[in-house]
Length: 73
Image (cartoon, rainbow, N blue to C red; front, side):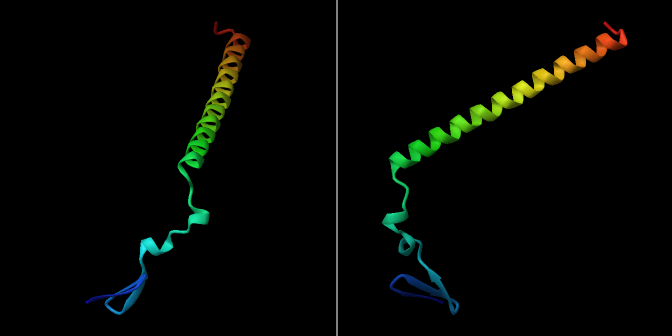
């Protein structure tokens, strides 16, 4: 059994706020803000990748140095 009362929908005696009632223009992200957020996320992802690559390069150098010390070259 479903009954609608403005922004509230009742289903089997339980009340649900309709999604359209949750729209708040003051807190809605605009397309321009979405672009800025996406660019920020991409920049952060590039920074994380660069740090990971630097760490990997350091580990490889350390491994090579250990092989040289052990005489495995």
